[in-house]
Length: 174
Image (cartoon, rainbow, N blue to C red; front, top):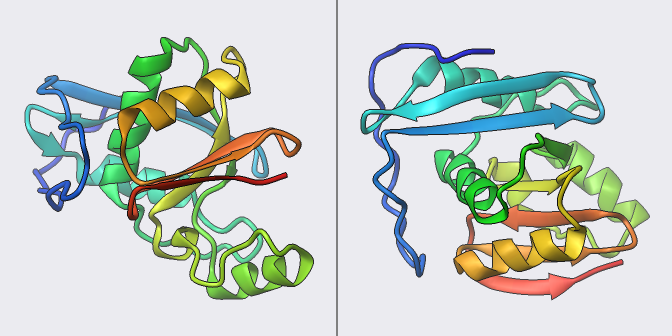
């Protein structure tokens, strides 16, 4: 998917984040959803504005694949992915394990695992679980931690890193 031109939308300020965003003229995202087989590659921010049509496409791409529910994804999460992309120098697309989760899906997953938070940021479109095909998981984890933004969970046995735009914290899971 290429860039889509649309009216501007301003995101919430990045309060509490240790490192400001760069003043790049464009920010992009490239992801493969492992559950749906869908891919997206798009410029989501250009010339100081988020591009609403692209944000809508990302919302759909990161929908709860179990229920089909679509929820707005916090644009700061895309900014975090863009920063991780730069920090790692990846040439690959993020492989998405989990984006948005409905309350029903989150409750079902909590029944299966103690590692699923009751008030998961996935339910508010503020979290994503990913890996990169060309970046070692421990290096990806280190890159996300180095940015000093939001929550970072490291799940080496499950082969993913959790990132969210909630309060800054970190943990390790299975």
